[in-house]
Length: 170
Figure 1 (cartoon, rainbow, N blue to C red):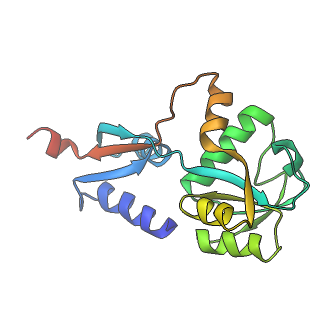
Figure 2: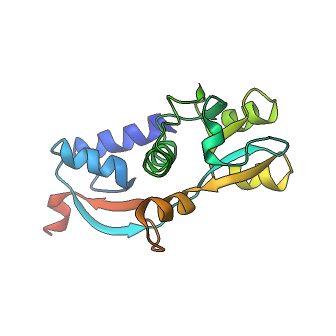
């Protein structure tokens, strides 16, 4: 998944694609790096959650400190969850936990299912599969963290639609 996102961003940056959808975080990085782009729409995609094993003693986000936590560190959902936790709770999920790196959602799920970690940064549809099967419960989700971090009930914009300047000038 990370390679697919990078490939899409690189193709757009190289002029091989004129129209893409991209996470706000990566779109901002592209803009800061001088990539010519025009945002022409947004979407809500806050589908991330921090889940814990159903029998976990972890009851609050603060309880994650020092615990084994799985996730895909380069994924935009993981990065967003971490940024929001840093803002709301003052600690880093990658540095202040025993972070276990996975490469894709199924890997994250298997680490939790097999008891290799106590919690996970994950997104839909894997969150629903873990909770509906009774393996996990949601500790918090991206939208709850967003509201706490920003002090608003507004919905977070997570995806932007980008077009090349050449396309938008036509």
